[in-house]
Each structure stands twice: as structure tokens, then as C-alpha cells.
Picture 1 (cartoon, rainbow, N blue to C red):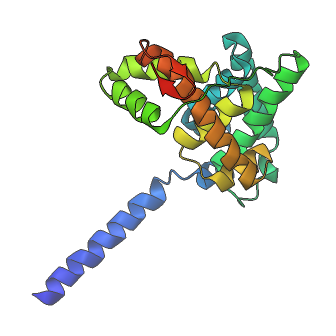
Picture 2 (picture 1 turned 60 degrees about the horizontal axis):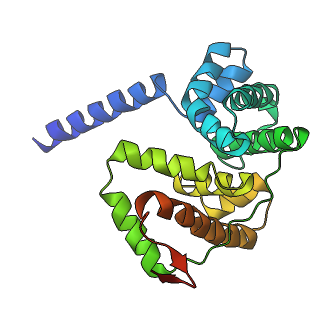
Length: 216
């Protein structure tokens, strides 16, 4: 009886392994196929990452038409440079670094660097009140409010917030993408989060005005 069950386990293992080999969906698999001349394999990578690449770019360049162009340029550049990808970091990290640099290049070209600062004191109790208020807003409306506020952040802040909270990238990965130090990323994350909540306050707590750190 034990031998019978062992044989079933071995058979299942072989079947599962064979299936995984035949249906590999790792990035490296499609990268290798692309480098061997299979352009359809690259389409899989584009399909997989195009939404997030566009999200990063639109939150930096702020203009839909330009974001579409920069996103397209990102995938063209990635395709042309694919042979240089060594797998030292995740493919997504490598791709997002291209998107980030392309977006910055477009912003600099247009001389549209946003240098404005949103300076407003916000307390921990305010954070909690805003988070609670967001919780009771319908998901679609909540997402739209957050997106609208992120678009009002400076370009680099919007990118870092998006990488960290939407893509769950680590501080180390974000530092690699942006070519900033990890300590710098931590500081920018803290400041960007405070700015984002200051903006969110006007959507979810319109009756609150912050004055000297106190709600009145």
C-alpha cells in the first residue's frame, strides 16, 4: 500500500514538473526567448508590465499623451538593451529604472520640474483620522482620490510613493531604481507620505483645518 501511494506521489511530481517546464511563465524564460529571436515572447513582458510602467510615468510627467509616449519609449529602450540585463536585480526593477529615467528626461526636456513645496504640519492623530475616513469611502472613489493627490506631488515623490506602496518595492530596490541612497529614500518616503496625507485631508476631512498642528 505504501509503495502504491509513493508511486502516485512520484507520478504526480513528474506530471507537475513536466507541466511547469512546458508552461514556464518566469520573466527570465521570456527574456531568453526574446533574445533568441521570438518577438512574441517580448509581448508577454510588455503585457505584464505596461500598466505599472504607465502608472509610474503618468504620475511623474502628469500629461496623458506624454506618458503614453514615454511608456512606449521605455519598452523600446528595454528591448534594445535586453542583452545587457544580467539578472542581478529583478527584471521589473531594471525595467522601472528605465521608465523612471525616461520620465525624468522628458520632464527636464520640457523644463517642467515641479519645485513647489507643500509645507503643512500634520499630526499622528490626523493620520489616523484620514485613514479611518478613507476606510469608509467606496474603493473606486478612494482609489481616485489617492491617485488625484499623488499627481499633485513632486515628480520624484510621486514615483517613490508609487514604488513603495503600489508595487511593494523595498527601500533598497527603490534606491537602485532612482540611484539615490537608501537613507535618502527613507527621508523622502517620510516627507512624501506627510505631503500626501496633507492633500488627502482636503478630500476626506474637509471640515478640518490644520493650524499649528491642532485640528480646529
